[in-house]
Amino acid sequence: MSIGLEDYLFVSILLFAIGFLGVLLRKNTLIVFMCLELMLSASILALIAFSRYNSTAANPLMEGNVFVLFIIAIAACEVAVGLAIIVALWRRIQTVELGEIKELKH
Amino acid sequence: MKEILFHFFAALTLLPAFFVATSRKPVNAAMNMLVSFVGLSALFVLLETYFLAILQVLVYAGAIIVLFLFIIMLIDPHKSPAPSLLRFLASIAAFALMVLTGYFLVYGPEAGPYAQLAAEAPASLSRSFGVALFTRYMLPFQITGFMLLIAMIGVIVVSRKDPATDGGEA
Image (tube, rainbow over all chains, first blue to last red; front, top):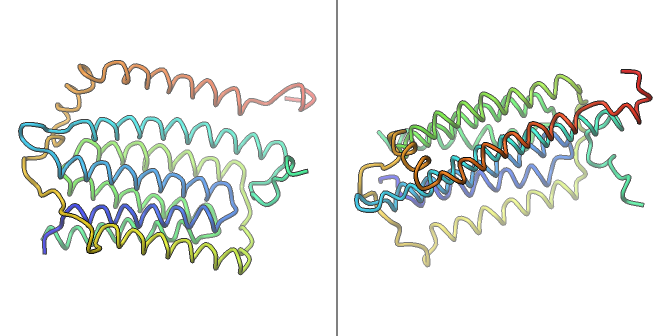
């Protein structure tokens, strides 16, 4: 049995589902944020697998790979800004638990 | 050989990812995420996308995890309480539903046919990235650079101590 595109896609789906599970299950902002990163990596894996398996010599399909490059750059920005927001939140109310952040609720 | 490597690295990606989702201490989650990203970059190597594999290790495993660990060290969060039973069951149910749907989408009777490996990998050389980035994707590349700058300035502004609310003691 050789490894086909569908196997990479299934790994990608599993990784995305695990990230989603973490977002639903955990209430610590940091871990929720890490699980968001896992979901982003899952989409990156799917993009690279599609790009690799659909490329031919005539049409090398660099688009998927270049797109991944931009996604990685944007993910770096997102993590920096998100962690800054978490630090600002910690300064203000000394918690990272999502259940205790309810100022806007009432 | 390639099949064994694929299964090994898929497990190396998915198992630590699962521990990230289930651990209650942020430090354990960050360490597991490090292993998971190394496994993911090994999968990129199996897809012969060497440049992105190196970039994944450098950016994710190098920079992002260190940033996470640094923030965890800075704010020292406590261990989270265990989730309520209802929340736990709902999360597991959503997870199972997603995995089942994904399985039938990918392996089900309606799925496929999938593309087969044809040409040699186009993205195995970093040269092909350079050519693509500096010709066709020049404008997005520049915009990404500016976006990094904007994010940096934004981080400084957001995480700076506000003298108005903190009474200016710093």
